[in-house]
Length: 265
Image (cartoon, rainbow, N blue to C red; front, side, top):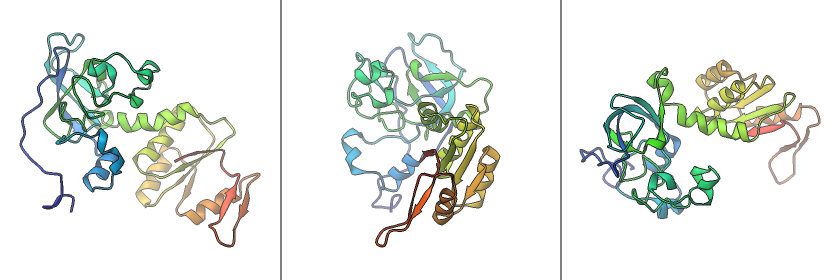
């Protein structure tokens, strides 16, 4: 339905977006990821509460690595040919606005002005008609969004955005050395959460709840110790942990009080 006559997603030839200002650049897409949020939008499973923040038509693609092919006269520090990873967020700085309270705190993903400024409505590259997105030949970006991709293959660099999504909660809520960690879900973010936990030096037990054999292979390679194939396996494992107590109410689902120290879901 999403791609049929009643759908709202099309494959089309369109004009490339122009630079919104003299300090912007154009990036030729090398690789662009397919995020879960993209799939939700394509298949019309996204929440309709997000409609006030959307603008149409837009080009998908916010997990991007590419090569600069055009540089505005005031875009200092970057040259044509530079390989870059692009932070997709369009916050106050990119919009040419004075920083809101969230941007002042450095929490650009919580910017309150995602309908304003030089790029107008749309919170990020890949959901903004003015900038375009990575599911096309090129898109535009502000220099503040660029990070050098030198030394990284395109296949690794394109994982930066999902890896950051996994790393941030680990940094905000790091486990202690003797903690037992549970990661719920072994998709891209879940697997990268295991990578992030090991990357920050955590050597304790990591359990992961997944669905498919290939997920468990990758989870084990990333550093998971306990592979849980079902909800029943999860409850049985959690109930065996020190201090845990399992309950089975008469008219409700079973649950465990205690269990793993930290859960990343």
